[in-house]
Image 1: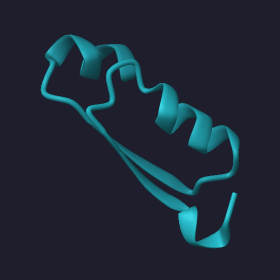
Image 2 (image 1 turned 90 degrees about the vertical axis):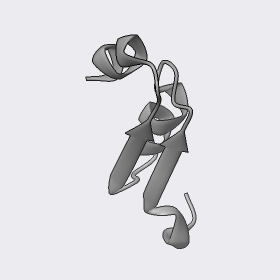
Image 3 (image 1 turned 120 degrees about the horizontal axis):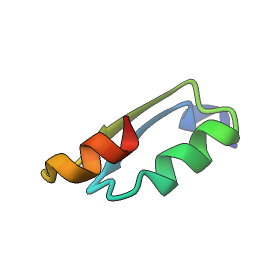
Length: 44
């Protein structure tokens, strides 16, 4: 992962797959954002 991609915003996160993949590739921090309570609960 490029060094400037250490902090990621996963907007419209849904299942959180993009953010979880970023974490698996050494992202330091991911903000997961979704308007659906069900999606947010799933990501937690």
